[in-house]
Image: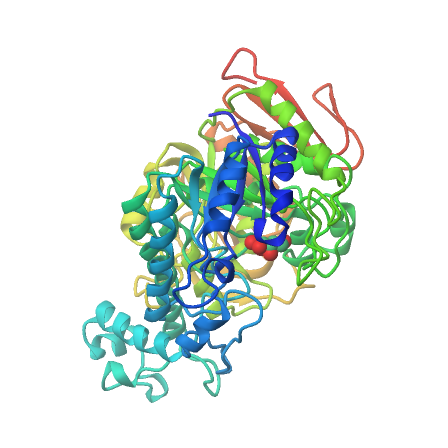
Length: 638
Ligand code: GAL
């Protein structure tokens, strides 16, 4: 499959007379896909049952007959105003007990049965009309689940559904009391009907209660999505997809992805740098107009796994966005760089958000490929350049990486429920591991605990909350060396300290005797260089000490196939550990210049330079904000 480009388009925002010209201009830019419809419910059904789809028929026909393939969105992220009158209790409720009102988007609770039925109804109406339309080549269900912190809702429908879910999970309330340790503080329940949602408690609620609620909330997202999948599958053979987000972990994307055909995600590199990363000012200034050199790649690799191999960028940042604390413009070349980087990681399609900047409402400060009055922005010509490069490049085949990271959404929920140290965060820890692998010039796969297929030299599973014997065995079978810790195997499924101790591994005699967390300015230095930050597991056991802290206590223990890491490593410590792992496994590593990243595909090596200035590497100059695509010669080798 040759990678292609697209754009997000809102025909309902523009006079119909503009549609054909827009379509022709998209084709002239080299775009072949257009996504429409995902927020247009109030125009599809202005009053309950009053369906107005003629305009959508004409929009699809105009775009399709111009040569574009349409991704049609179900509009369920934006229920129209009348829906709230029809289902007064459908709004999500925040942790303070306040309904989240109409007037923006995503104003629904995933547990509201009446709203789920409305979504199935509109999906059916659309699929009956367009399911076999030759121009509709894919369907997007809803838009960005979890955006604006909407996965969790403390509503009455949510409470009722949670009680049923708990009864299903635990069978008896006695079993739940035991599993959660409710004898503590006399929190025992006599029936499932007594159990409330874990908000507005006097002090922190039981973390087992919180984790169960997070699991439930995630399941509700998957079930909500599945309801529309079930309708669409009967009426179309086109692939079904959803657009996920950057660093949004509030539901298990692998579960949602299992019911879809393609994972897509929305990539806003400059917005993420200022809005979603903990890095210091020097880093944020160095990459202010480029974005972090690893953040996009991490999500590309994650969503390749969530899509079980098939993934796209559905929304690619084209210029300044409107939602981050600061919104600088990309440096020249960056839109092309981001697009090519996505392709290097296996994107089938990169689609820009949005075709033309809206002159009204919340996102009027958000750039598009065109200005509101239809003049080209720099991103338009970079899209055109990208299309030309892609047509020369042809197919970009992926190969399995030599290293993988195990990513687990439930670990994030667990550690958010009981952080113990203010600097400890699951994503932050995993991302620090990912960055270290990329500094070593490695291409990385991401795997889930349910699907560790493939054979790797090395798998990193930092912060993995719960490990049982089966997972320990599967991990070891999938690689020469697995590195766990810190805070791995630290709790049971129900948030108790395992009775086997922590991390409770069968194959490694290593036990966590106590846990310390550190303030951000304090480090725990390691002999020979590097330090642990935020979190330190104090280890004992007969497994060899591979690294020690300066006070002589173990920083890394292990045997030939399994290592346990005591602390949250700083960059130097991660780099040392990756080098040691490479020596043990025969993995080939190299030190990349700062801001230069490498991705290997079957036939090419992509050198991606996030710096504003050129970088010379391996006798090859890569210009600033640019990508060098080298042929692997002979095929299969660098
Ligand atoms: C995404 C969303 C789009 C638009 C965009 C702005 O999160 O899916 O609808 O809001 O952000 O950057």
